[in-house]
Image (cartoon, rainbow over all chains, first blue to last red):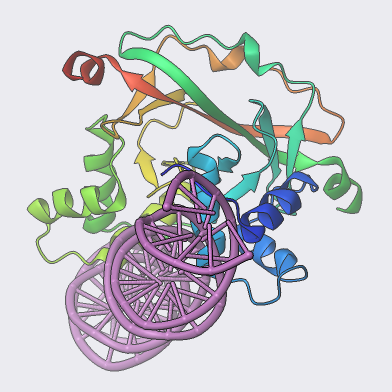
Length: 126
Length: 126
DNA sequence: TATAATAATGATAATCATTACTGATAGTGA
DNA sequence: TCACTATCAGTAATGATTATCATTATTATA
């Protein structure tokens, strides 16, 4: 589904998503964007996230429960702390070095790498 | 939630999951296990999958849509063809070589890598 | 600038995957 | 064998996401 017209709702969504780095869920985004457009619909949010993803402007991060979204579409890895649930970008991980040579693959267009473990914040607390 | 007693339902689930390599969804498994235990409940299936996952006997593979499951709990990468939807094991990808050095990380205990793209079967057809 | 075509919206209903609940059943230690 | 209770089947409830539809707003063109 191509993007054919601009809308202030979509602008607000992509703007919000690109200005934060905490990998929000759809509901997180909904609550934030409502500060700008109070009567925006949750359906509009989901519709636009799907559309933006299809057009390569947004990354969907599956993590086993509710999907998260990322405005940074450069391929990069993520780390999820299984204690606090936060998802962080992995800056020092060079995902470009990955090669896929398996027999079944014709072409790899994207990938999602999620590491799980304990973050330093949670380690201090416990 | 620890496993405290054995049950033929759980045995059938883990047996089915370990004898196939197509990364079935919960519903796929439900339909298969019903061939063995016709009146098994979908709730029992989900309860046991969660329990088996918590006990490290099953891997949950999030891929952005319905979760898939894997009886092979050795860390390994996956490839999903975005045309046919099939998920394959990546045998030639050495995930053990990955290193995580980011500032926020205290400890990495597990990771999941899903590559997306086009498989050779779908490339032939289209 | 006005108009026509239709993409996009808000509101809400529907769907789908998953989880929670409840009374019945069955595995296990004494 | 008995008592305890984990586990079960069946089903209701939940939560996330998608679909529908009448209305609104964007945009190309007259």
